[in-house]
Amino acid sequence: MTDLQTCRELLRQALQDAHAELRNGQWEAIDALVNHRQKLLVVQRTGWGKSVVYFIATRLLRDRGAGPTLIISPLLALMRNQIEAAERLGLRALTINSTNREEWKSLIRSILADEADLVLISPERLANDEFVQKVLLPVANRLGLMVVDEAHCISDWGHDFRPDYRRLLNVLQHMPANLPVLGTTATANNRVLNDVVTQLGEIRIQRGSLMRDSLALQTLRLPDQAARLAWLAEHVPDLPGTGIVYTLTKRDADQVAGWLNQNGIAARAYHSDVEDREHLEELLLDNEIKALVATTALGMGYDKPDLGFVVHYQAPGSIVAYYQQVGRAGRALDRSYGILLNGLEDDAIQEYFINSAFPSVE
Image (cartoon, rainbow, N blue to C red; front, side, top):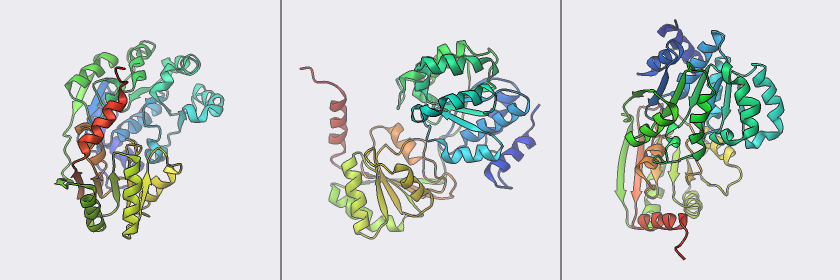
């Protein structure tokens, strides 16, 4: 049986912090997976450390002779910094996705030869017959753990619904009955949880507090763009550390980033039309700029524990989207700020997005 002290030592090794302690619920989750081979859905706040749970569980299971962990995640960018923690535990991670198709043969050989500890795939891989037949089914009986990251994407009632997650029910039928399964999410209401249970089967749910004491939230009603731009120029320099300013449109991201630079504040626009996005992420990670001005293209997988602030230039489309975005601030800080600048045109922008998503009756 794995004990608490062993997990604590692995945590400190992964984080390179001799004083790190497991957070509430982390040991219980690892114990459920490793010692009791349970199916578990963890509903915990952003920054709680869900990846730590499955990395440590993988290390422990591999040491017992178990096969690799399969991680199904919409966040294949996830993990650039999380993977470093896994590597400090001696874990080798491989990713199979549409961007490295030329490497598939060698990656598949490594997986089948049991040379990978973590195999990361997107849910869309489950729709690829070649992957299912040549990779997934041959290793199904040898898997040590299956992780369904951002499990709310299973549900069409959840934000960021990914239809291919619905294939999990069929995939699990090919897996050993006692395979431990971990689902993770920070945002799941009861309706979403019911959908997750339908896909993953009988599963124990671990809920933690979704509040974080280190994050102070504020909403300011500013009538127009001029007022919000003036507020940004005056107050962003005084916000702690570095952060993200979220906008609803690419045009606004460009405009706000340009305005901040004109006022002596180092900022860069980040959206789907920007080609060097990974470089921009690194600039913020290294605190070489004050802020990224970003659309939702800066997705769920971006993790900067010392992010000092998140400012919303306009209101996001849903409370869940707001929670996900503002939750990036202050994960490893004693104090951080989430500030929503609510303007008159916010509703009009959201209505435009809604109308654009559906064809006209004509």
